[in-house]
Length: 240
Image 1 (cartoon, rainbow, N blue to C red):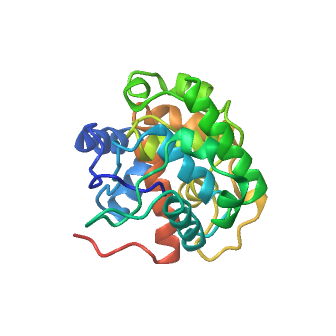
Image 2 (cartoon, rainbow, N blue to C red; image 1 turned 120 degrees about the horizontal axis):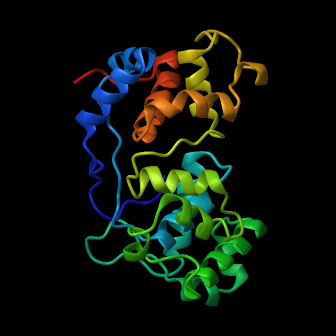
């Protein structure tokens, strides 16, 4: 997950209304919501698109602990934390462009991720990657169009940015494994004890068809599909 620069907060949309309407629209989803408990999604909306996407690139295809170590090393390579600061200041796009390859690789970045970070930095400076002020005024579709021009940034990465950084309420990441598995557990024949095979997972078309009734709260529904996986694994925290 991207590094928070302020205390995470709930999304600004009406969560109570979202849960009420989702439960009314889809009885099975309503039962999942009841089982999973309170909606706990938190966002750090003050983090810039550049900062969030730097971390997204670092975290791709890595275990969370390993990725966190690499990200910390990357930040520290540009300057030590200030007095009382828990983390080093975040480098700017120009810092990333000016940094020698040796510095970036020494932090633990692969060659592909080094190239992706440099492309992100260049596209931030030329305006392809919008500022936080700009991105808040853009539609979900426009954000996907802009950010997927960056090397190493696909639609899934942008969807995670929309849900977890901008707090957009109506995003359905149909290629996300956890959302697909949660859908199969909730609406398909998959049981918690089953070994998941590709045939068990729904197609995007199947998910999109059912999710029409979830609009305009598909992000909330997706969050609960992730929780369906946690329920199956016995990983949910105690209810408040």
